[in-house]
Length: 458
Image (cartoon, rainbow, N blue to C red; front, top):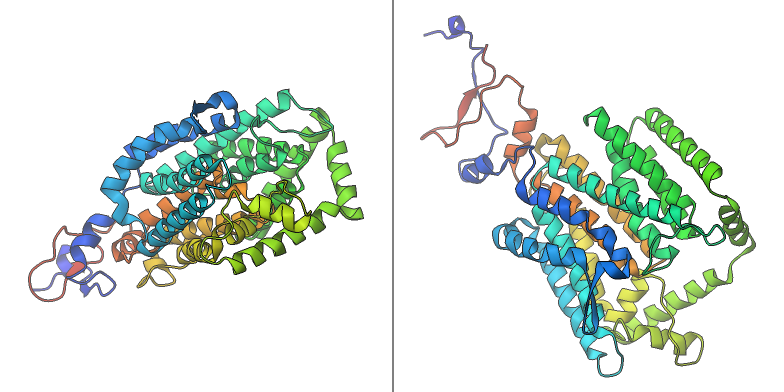
């Protein structure tokens, strides 16, 4: 009997849909774009991260200073790890576990000769734990955006703290526990992620406006600091945002944001710090050559001791003796040098292997991510953040366990997980590509033959 009188266009096989073997997982894996309980809990945790900048925001324990946000994050990490650890990309997870284990072994190997190893273990454990917890807490696109808002609000609060206590000759630095070099490690991630969301036309205008205000305030805080690597990171973010398609539209938006930032900087602050640093860089700074020597020396130490390195806390003494010829301490000022010289080649390869695995798509996931545009966007965000991490890490080892970067890594990874970037999930792409008036997918595979469905019902 003909079906044309009933308004059906016809039955056609859905070749792009999952096979019978993959159907149960695909039918239940597609997440709804809604706020979740764990996503909201992590949002609350992000509001505690700025407390790490102050001594009163850390819990003093014998030999340790524990970040307040870690106390709130610990039970949340335990909960999501028990329920969702299998969602994390297996290869990257194994690399992370091996890296942290080797890092701790390296710290303990130097414990008899050097001090402060308890704090070093807490730092690396807290940083990797923050990334893992964030990745498992984010369950939807809305969770991701909420986490970005939480990070941005916390950093803006730090900016106002820095503005109110600025010494113009030294620049803005609201951090009580660190210098201006660490300030950009707090402020760069929300500028990148917030800027990307500002350029996303699918987001509500009020949210984009709010994030644009946060980006402007944070950019002013970076420009008003005396940190050249922070300025470099800001310039890199500008290039990244301009490269996100629709160049002219992005250029107009970023031009307006930049103009407002400069006017605020020139009106309420002074540009003398900026001018002084530019002149110093143009003339040639002796510290730049010292950084190169430290990097090469750390690489040689890592090659000579490939298994455990000189230990993270012992590397400072090794570099001082190698460069200056005395028993003082010199910071490597480079995360690659810190990893290779401090932990050896094995741990370093595991860490960068984790980054490579996260950079790539999962096995069986095509270039178009099964037609899921959100998956492509999420993976692009993560890649841009990784590039920023590498470039900024060339000037600081602290980026390895800085809480804002760790949280930013985690929420980007979590968003990628929900969109099936590393695990083949055709249901996500099918749901994205389906017409808005298509009937819902059935919850079970009909018995016998190939699954067929009406593509359009009038």
